[in-house]
Image 1 (cartoon, rainbow over the protein chains, first blue to last red):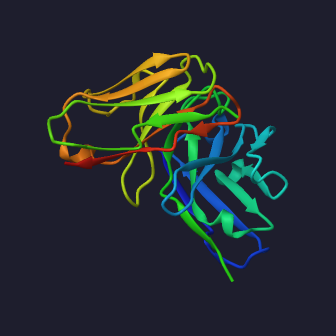
Image 2 (cartoon, chains in turn brown, purple):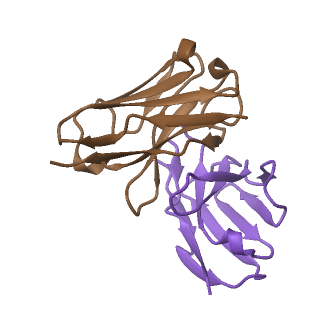
Image 3 (spheres, rainbow over the protein chains, first blue to last red):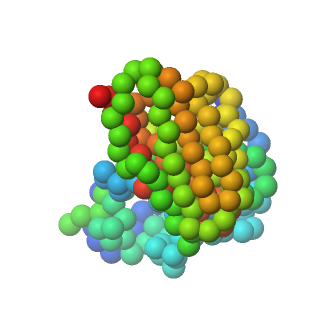
Length: 123
Length: 107
């Protein structure tokens, strides 16, 4: 069974940093692209970042480009999201998701999703 | 970015009703359209991928159709567990976007 378990969320002050982790199991980790999607309280879903199976290609939404960095560590079956210069607009539940099939994260689908981790940016 | 517009944004229906939710893309996305169901406090769950393919384990009362710019999600006979929010997602572009969501409530 594929499982994704996010961690690392919490309360951080504006301008601060946080690193989220997503531990994966139940599949050949290096064969699948992984993504982060966030959801602000009471709002819809927003794609944040994606990384190829090899880790050689990364993609970020314009809203986080230059502030967030996605990476992966195959030896630990873990994908990370390093978040810097956080602002109130980054407050959200952050989900990690696995690409449905091997190949690119786009022209694909997300399945499954982790349970999410809440990031709150506030002073 | 490709804009995804869902309608309606919210709807009320009864158990046993047939319900259709539409999703329109601002440009052609071929069939790179997925549908997700989300219940309060839970992660999204994949229902339909590639516009019309039913994900394994999803009840057959769910179906999807469309290509190009116009897509639909249909629930043929609503069950109590189907009351949730539904999102469409385009993955044609590397800049993935979601619809704003359609909240399905009990009448």
